[in-house]
Amino acid sequence: MQVPRAGYVEVDRPIDRGDVMPRGSWSDKRERQHDHIKSGLEERGHSEDESEEIAGRSTTSKAELLKAVGR
Image 1: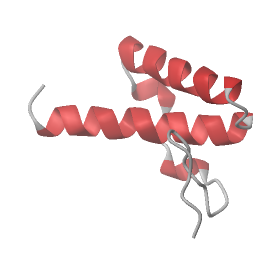
Image 2: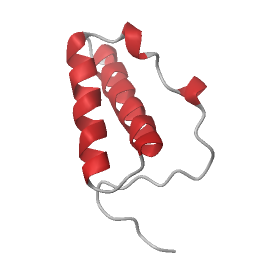
Image 3: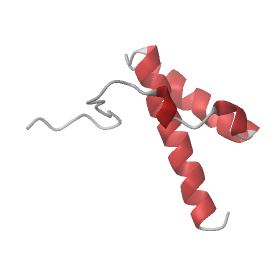
């Protein structure tokens, strides 16, 4: 088994846009975080679709974590 590089997330199934939180429901701060993550991934060679999926999941996960701890 090959170990992925740091910051690399392997997508082992087709991208399903239904899994990603709708961008319109995010705050301006979450939107900026999403765009920053997406552009960074694209600069490192990820496709636009893959970058969109990873950024959406990362931003959503962070928002849910902060909500769970009461912030």
